[in-house]
Amino acid sequence: MSGPPTLALAHVSKSFGAVRALRDVSLELFAGEAHALAGENGAGKSTLVKTLAGVHRPDSGQVLVNGEPVEFAGPADAQQAGVAVIYQEPTLFPDLSVAENIFMGRQPRRGLRRIDRGAMRAQAGALFERLGVTLDPEQPARGLSIADQQLVEIAKALSRDARVLIMDEPTAALSGNEVARLFSVVSSLREAGCAVLFISHRLDEIFALCQRVTTLRDGAWIASEPVAGLTHDDLVRRMVGRDLGAMYPKQDASVGEVALRVERLTREGVFTDVSFDVRRGEIVALAGLVGAGRSEVARAVFGIDRWDAGSVTVDGAALPAGSPTAAMHAGLALVPEDRRQQGLVMELSIERNIGLTGLRSLRRGPTISRRAERDRARDWALRLQLKFARLSDGVGVLSGGNQQKVVLAKWLATQPSVLIVDEPTRGIDVGTKAEVHRLLSALAGEGIAVLMISSDLPEVLGMADRVLVMHEGRLTAEIPRADATEENVMSAATGRAA
Image (tube, rainbow, N blue to C red; front, side):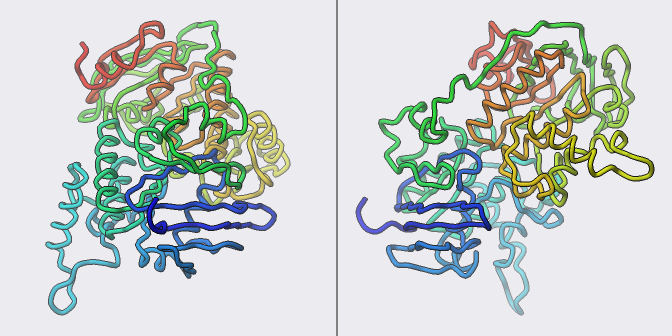
């Protein structure tokens, strides 16, 4: 590369107490280049990003802008230097409009310093037009899907005319078309001289978008190298320090009686006439594009949302509409798509989160037994190979993959007969993905009926005994494992199959 890097780290180390998050890490981001950052959860990627963004100061080493050492006193300094970050979890103000979120603190003004709302709406609209998406700038942020929230974050970053764009799992909740639009935007930013740091657990995206890749493992720099000439296996080996083995360890299981039956389920304006069943020992995937209605069906089955017509039965017993309590008592468990907002109480400890679904069984007289709560949490932590320091630590200190394991532990502790998992491996690393897949296969082997909602086609094809495909609120296909291909699943997902 000619000239100094736009943004760089030189021999940076960072510790939090006894935990060494970064150890002598160097990274160079050049104008006009998309540079991938790869590594398992807990490898140090988030700490590296927050160091570049001015959230953390290095204990040793330097941050350099255009070859000159700088000291960011906070995120505002990094933004002033042209660094914009799109974090994995959206951070919008729910009661403000989309446009207000994009320009928070930087609203266009007119006379008497009054906010020019017309100009703000117009500029927000232009950003969405540049992204190739249709989103109303006046719409409140509350109620936006994760995909739309992510798009607002991307527009916010673009509005700052950043010279360095750091994208932390920006595609995790996007459909194929939205990912293609995003890649087009990244290409135009590169052509305009922007340096892009792209973080994704989807290795195909790294190979499709990036020119170079830096790999971290256990906080240490492993390699920085051109993507050209690397294979998927090469990159995985650098990330995990070993050959990963089977990514989709699907075991043959004995399929038993119907555990979950959904008949002609309808919620007006959301989904219509949805019927399917899931048998014990079976993994059934619910596939489709973002907005097809998959998560909404799961929420209705579990009783979070009321349905308008149809029925749900678990082991032959009919469930009432709109009652999660009845669903839990019947043996249903739901691992939601958004683990931080819907699956965990981030202010509570690991052990308390795991115990939330079984407070009645943990009661000793009028109080909850802390010992019983801790024993239960320790048992599930060992079974799911959870990586933690203390069970009393806040769940927020865990990596994304380990947070997902806590959500799984919380629901598996209820001993369900039917487990619904919505995007079970969204935003987690390849090593933990294989662990989650192995767990789902083992649960099916124990006779649990598993309904898996996933936007990851290789995951669907690798793990499902049957694939149900939704398009615009309707089931459009049911495909047995032996016949399922990316082509026929995508055909049904886009409405091209009967």
